Image (cartoon, rainbow, N blue to C red):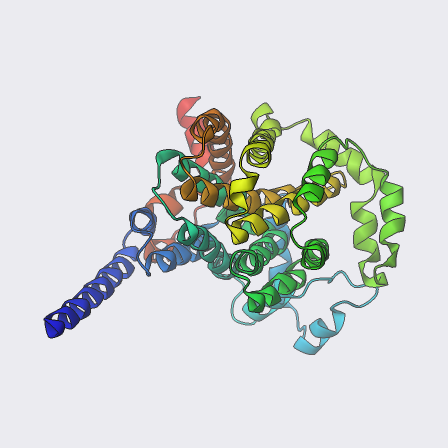
Length: 428
């Protein structure tokens, strides 16, 4: 009997390895379809790697505007300049964190330089961006999936999709900021939920992707010192929700303690003129772009109020989840303040990531809490609205090649036509 059990276990392991190999081979034929199929079997160990490889393929087929002032086109232009220049590694390295230098981050320019020594094709660069971003992105999604304890309902799937769309793969056009966000989450979640101190190094590494992650690291350090002060964090979370404006000149003076190498960057973010430009630009967006983020904030506040007033006593029986809730309140409150600075609103998305990790685990771990089902149903319209708009935004960055192509075809066929443009042409 024991030999049969061992043989059966070996057979199952062999079958799963063969199953994974079949998916990897099939990926070469139709990446998008295989990626979707892998999501259905997310519990398989190879599924996250299939998703990761798709992120690389997405980067390779990522649509870069030929002309424009967006981050992706600027990165492509700088990359081509690197490829044509005689810049040495020593010269590049000496420019990092030097006064007057434009480089206050290391990872992106270093990646661009190394790739430029091999090729001048921006598609290869964005494939490498997809490789780096996709690793942390896939691991964060699967980490949250692995923390779920109970039944996965349709509403839970919607929450997971929303979580995945906060910082999706198509934001690699702004690689520095959003790769930093994924790296920070990658390091912080295991610390909060498993007391994994070793992973905190990744939280610090996020600063080398984007210097602004000094602020999340400081928030994390503050939490490490204060620990689980639920009532203080909750009051802070609520109070910051009503702060509507902040004196940017005051912010500039407060942050003057930072090294001079960050001076120009800080001045740019805390510049009232920059704030006015961003405000005017935001008014030109379609209405759904202006409000889909607010829909998620509404869900966050409703869910937090429910947990605090009706479930906090039960939550104390689950110390790790309680810790995550406390940190999420502190981080979100700080993000509310930072969001009043131009471009600071991006930290709300990072705060959403922690909040929704808590919501997903809470919903699957404690599904029978009175009133939770009603709360879930009430939040569905807002989540659907957010997901639809987020997917629509993504259509500006990929085309038919990403959906129907494969690596072999993509090598010889550069698709520069966004999917949304094709849809609009068909409909209108």
